[in-house]
Length: 198
Image (tube, rainbow, N blue to C red; front, top):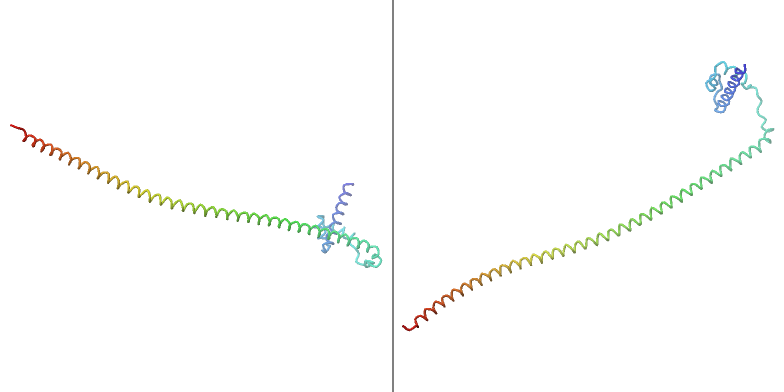
């Protein structure tokens, strides 16, 4: 018996929740809508709706009589909402200021890095220009040395040729001198022989 009562209470609670949800959403509260929202049988939804449907002849809410009671509550609710809104605005403004500060800091750091990179590029360009000038000077010196070496090689060749000619001339002179000496010796020997008494 207790189990049946518990099931009935659970069904009634589910139907009440479904009724409240449908009313808040502005949807028509029908047996079918209650059944689908509360997930109960059609009979249970129909019985609950017959028992709990508000009567249509309810007089309007006495706004004048309730105004004095509800006004302080409404004022407190509006003040709380304004305070909450102001706190949210303040927090959002603080977050935006912090984000702007962070962005400006990052921009300053990026600008500094870019300036450092530009300085480094300028320094590298100066070094490249210096190395290019030194390379050009080295090329010119190498070409000059190559010219001097070629001239020295030509001079050495010419000196060897001159030395060779001088050696040939000396050998020829020696041969001529030897020949002349032999002739002289022969002439001298003949002349001496003719002068010898018989």
